[in-house]
Length: 307
Image (cartoon, rainbow, N blue to C red; front, top):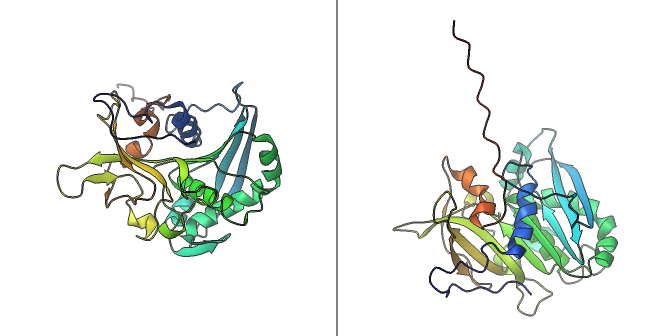
């Protein structure tokens, strides 16, 4: 079962999702797919990883004639449980697809983000031959995760895997949990149903960095509030969603979690922007109390010798 959480906590008690091993086991690979840019510590050679495979494909952006970029997905297994992690944006090609939010249909799911489909479809084709292996080896739970654009890929992949009729022809794979961090939205609200649960909800969590405002619209929120990548049309699929407000930008204290339970849409919010956006967009590991390795500071150019 996914983590059940409540905002009705004892005073000063950290939220159940803070420093939670289940959350961190999904956040760590999702943020590690960029190398050390966001402090990820995932090690595919760790003794606890029984099987690891990386999928790579070149993807071209909408209205972009460049050579495209390399998109990645990771599959790995620990004991009986497995994870699939999707990488987020790291190139101009990805951003062109991020802005291609026009609705399309894909594998039986309608009103989905066209740019997300363009990113996800080639990765699914690479993974397809391994679906039987995943089905046979993942005798526990399968968790799908991703950050930013990777979170949108994780949403759409999970939705299609659990969709009626097995449109991806996985042979019976089931996504048991979905964790996303600062994710774009890939689907229309009415389409985001988990067809393999009674309540149509995905266990896990969709987590967004947020700043709380003193007046007006209550929250300024990472990515999901931006109409540049949603077109005002796409929403998170059905799951518990959290706006997480840090106590400070050193992340030295537990943050405050604002919960929007499955079946309830997130409220109107202002999109994060400005010079601190990238810092906040990449800060999910320290924000959530997960282990992280601070990226190295930029190297200053050598000082010219005095005459």
